[in-house]
Amino acid sequence: MPIFQPIILTTLTITTLIFLSSTHLVLMWVALELSTLVVLPLIANKSHPRSIEASTKYFLTQATASALIIFSWTLNYITTGGGQISEVTNQTLTTIMAMALFIKIGLVPFHFWVPETIQGMTPTASIFLLTWQKLGPLIMLYLMSPLINFEVLSAVSILSATVAGWLGLNQTQIRKLVAFSSIAQMSWTLVIIKYAPSLTILAFYLYSITISTTLLTLEKLSTTSVNSLLLSFQKAPITSLLLTISLLSLSGLPPLAGFLPKWLTIDQLVAEGAIWVAFTMLMASLLSLFFYLRLWYNSASTLPPNTANTQRLWRKPVQQTNLTINSLAMAAFTLILAATMMKAITKQEAY
Image (cartoon, rainbow, N blue to C red):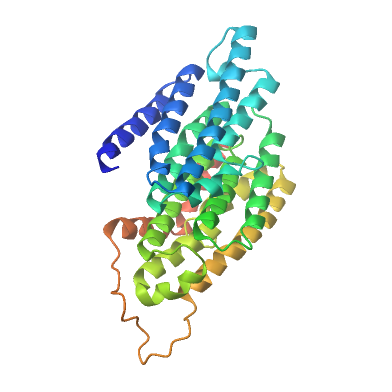
């Protein structure tokens, strides 16, 4: 796999540049296909039935979404003769294409492939799938945001936040919890894309940093279940503290970075008159808050029964954190004072 890493990174960079520089649907569709194919080796990098199953589910789901996108473009080209993404003016075709992009991102009711795929991947490979791989569909939704019906966006976002939080309550596998967390976080990213696209960029940026910190610390601690976190503070207290910061940031508690996009999103929704959408999103986020706090409680606030004379494990040396985890954790600990600048920018866009 190391010999293919430069090829994978180069291909992902090229597809990202295509998304940023082109507005033609065919080129964007080609970039989506390239990014899908290049992620498959990351998923199936082990000769394990779980990895093969995860790659198969991912490929079939992404192929279905790609077929819907090219189907919408074909019908739009026949009726209007336009190939640009801004020329998809038919509301039905716009909704079909938006649903296809929701499948690629993994929102409810098309979320079934996300936890199963993440469960079969390593935490480092999961970073690409949960952050970089979502960038292309998110850019397409950003360009389509003036054409998408807000009722569709709000319904999918509320369902995603509610279902992801509900499914994560009794989940004991760390990777599946991270997958449900990703679904809930992306719902906050997309609910405001029609009214304030700049908030979508901010939310996705902070989400990418925080989820990367969480996955890197989990890989450093070598934990796969919630119960295994009970020993993490004894093995690596600093890494457990960084995991606590990233988890609380994902939950949206102040003064951490995750609170900033949620606060600004609620403020913008209320300003646009979508009070019930803001209230429902807040209530749904309480479900996710519960399993975030459960992870924090197991990782940093409890100690397992110990009959030894020392509180430190002697069987395993203490693991040291690396520079990448420390840098991402510092970025996750952003104070909410930066909210005043972002709030002024969004208000200028509203005027």
